Image 1 (tube, rainbow, N blue to C red):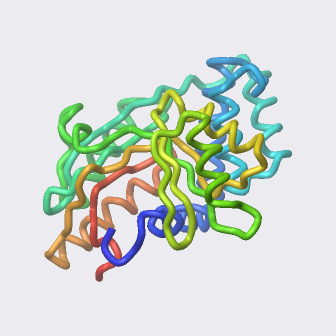
Image 2 (image 1 turned 90 degrees about the horizontal axis):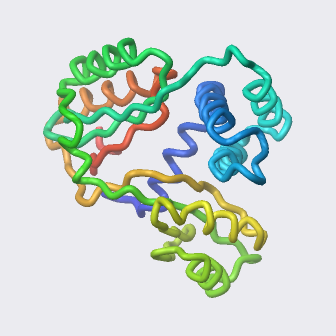
Length: 245
C-alpha cells in the first residue's frame, strides 16, 4: 500500500479495531457462538472454535470473557441462529469491496449494507462481482523481537504447511491456504510464537487508488457506516491511498 508496508497497514487496521474494543468483542462473541454450535464447546476437538479463541486473544479478549462466551453458547438452547453472508460491491472510483456479515436477520442486514453503499457513493453488486479480484488466504502476523529467530520462524511456518513467508522491517507475514491455516497457527502457538494477528482473510490482487478527494471522503463514509454495524464482521477492499486526505 502507498507509503506503508503490508505489515504496517494490517497492524494499523488492528490497532483501529482495538480502539473500538467493545464492538469487536460483540462480533467475536457471535463468532464464538457459531463455532460452538457447529462443533461443540471444547476447543481441543473443535478447530474452528480454537481459531476463534486465538483470534479473540489476539484482540485482547480476556480468558474469562472467552470462557463465559463459550459457556453461554453451549448452555443456551434458545440461542440466536446466526447466518454468515457475504456481500460484494463497488465503492467510489470503482474500489472493490467485500462485506462479511454474521446475522440473525438477512433482510435487515442486506438493507443496511445496501444503504451503506448508497450513502458512501458506491453500489452493491451481485455475488461474484468483485470476489475474483481477491485471494482468500490465512494470514499470520508476527512482530520482530530478539527472542524470535527469522530462520527458525520461517522453518516452523513452512514445515507446518505455510505457502509463503515474508520479512518486513516491523515483522513477518505468513500466508497459508484457507484449509491449512489452523495447522500452521497451532504449530506456531505450540512453538511459543506470539502472533500479533491470525485469521483467514481476503487479500486484494491489485490496488485501486482514489484520485478525487470527495470520493475519498465518500469511501471513508462507506467504511465507517459498515464498521458501526454489529452484523458486519469484516470489510475487505483494495483501496490503495487510504491515508491521503
